[in-house]
Length: 437
Ligand code: PHE
Image (cartoon, rainbow, N blue to C red; front, top):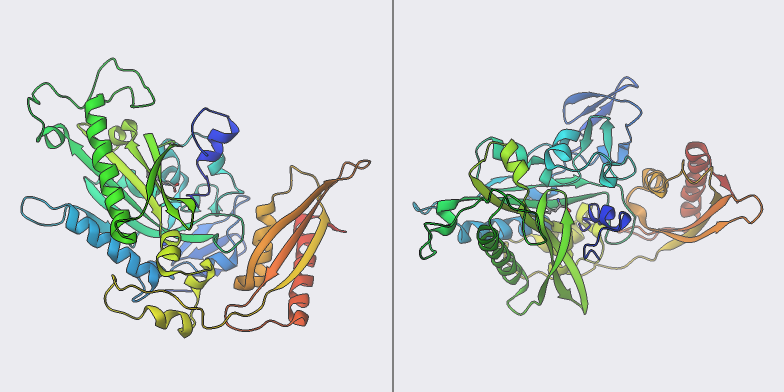
């Protein structure tokens, strides 16, 4: 996502396929060494386990449902939009909302049920937090769509925390929040308002897949769905950012939708991707038993939108327990116009670390980022890979990283930063077999 960090489009880039790509705290205990207790459940560990104590400690915080939290205000606004926009004949809202599904999912839910190929890079240990080889912390709320469809739901939103191993900077945090939506329609529903629609069908028997549609779909059904989805999403964006917001659609690739798009908005002269969406792969619907319906789906990242809406400069602030932050959002009306004002800005301290890698294949920067975050916690503002160098004789690779340390609530002293930095060096040597230069 986007922060959705091109989790999915990595593949399109690597295979150079021609596609324009440009969610109750302290929930865990480690008891015996080969077992973890997460959210009250025991899980066996194995050599896939890479979930860290820092991440585990945040399981169950559920920021998206904390009263007055900015992510909760935004969730409410999006829910209200869907309630207002889509109603049944009897006037009741069509969309049902799921905001407390456990983030612990199976590989089947997160990937297989969504047709993510077995060799897709988004499945890698370097990209996800695994509990064991079959279980992980969901990397997207899309992980629940197949099971909810199989339960018979046609219109729903899933809201929750998602987990991805990623870079560290002011806009990336290993946990963020997403809203996913699914809307399924029958032939009758979509062609109801079309004149002379007797001959119009959802499916086509000997069709072929094109950029516009899946083989099994009729072009007319796809076009109607595409239009409803795009209108819904541009109007949602206007509801959040005001009617003058500039939007554009960009073709995208996801294994679970086709065709697929991203919606971008112009923000401070930059195009910013805010969501991914598309016409759902019919195989997903078919396997879930929805054989006479066609569907659209989208997924959007809440932090990304909330940072722009409320002028929040750093993604770590969402996790702050500081009253200076939280009190600014203490309003009952989720539509209130709030612009966050930093109480004060504390200075950063930057220390560099350079080391020789044990070997390119056995090393991933994401392992290093996790070690730094494990030791420094939320005072780690950013880690920048400043320099890569291959020794001409030994052919050994060296990486130099700048680690920016900054506390959100007080000034750090260089002395205390140096101590943390030393621990980082020691841990990198012990856990990653690197050699400090
Ligand atoms: N799950 C996708 C992501 O996190 C977003 C998405 C959801 C795209 C549903 C299409 C349909 O990047």
